[in-house]
Image (cartoon, rainbow, N blue to C red; front, side, top):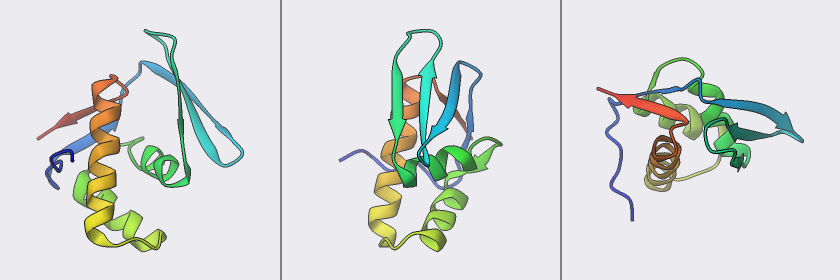
Length: 95
């Protein structure tokens, strides 16, 4: 299990990608390594939210409002997604 990203951490996309919607989901091309990443509906919503700087807690609250998911699961899934996107240089996290 990935350690939860703190709710007060700010997340925003970087400029190292090109993204487009395909059938309601986002496909991201990382410009530096040429790898494509696909996000499901929830991941796509997180991606939309981080187009401008957002605290993780706000992202979790929005996902809870819009999708049928338990808080603990939502916190874990959002944290894992943000960690994965950050490790690939697609988002930046700051305090």
